[in-house]
Image (cartoon, rainbow, N blue to C red; front, side, top):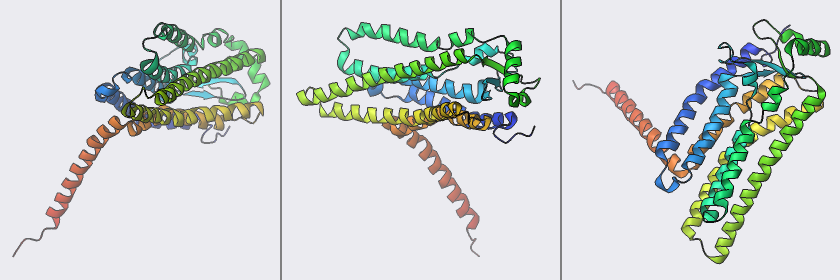
Length: 329
């Protein structure tokens, strides 16, 4: 069978490795900037920002380097092409990646702002411990039911090859097709859990955003917040919105498209590959946006890179001048 560029596992994996080659140094640089260049005025948000950066980076590298899932619709399955595969890491463990932890980490940014500004001396200082424990426990254990319900592979492969013979050419000794679910009821159950998880993240995030903005508005009305504090909070929130919104679009839009195409039975390996390629850069885009929109990080990067650029430019000009000087007779 002849594969197109995006449906060919080899070229798909190569594209992801190239993305990882550029992503890894950016992720490490972003972590360094947060840990060592965060100013004292941002010390209270340093660790929640690092937490979000860590999980964004982890998801990126899971998609582009460690696992590289290659999904073959209409089957709920495929195989993995990343560096964990030749190391013999269990397929069930690789199946367990999800975006829930990224969502929970995003909620933590807004909750942290609300807590520090308006609820530090209230009952919420105890309630937030319960919320964080519940959120991270559910996020980290989100895929456990799916992993538990993974069927016997011999039986599952026979069923899906009979139901979808077009999948058979993708099955090779090096990369046998791994079936996560083939029963329609189980697939519906997984879909419902995804919707509930997404709804919970949106509901929690929206709640803290509302509480944050309502209390800021109330503080302005009662004149209990200084203009300087207000300006700083608005600048920080604007940067966070940009840091979250654009990567969220990169992450969510491909998933919505895949779901819609799946319902219309129009999905294809090419579309899935393109979607995962896009999703694998969501974290690096968040890092670059963070470095650009947060003023202290932008200032540090400007000093670091512009200074080096100026040094290189001066040396180049000096070399050019030396090379074109005419010796006097």
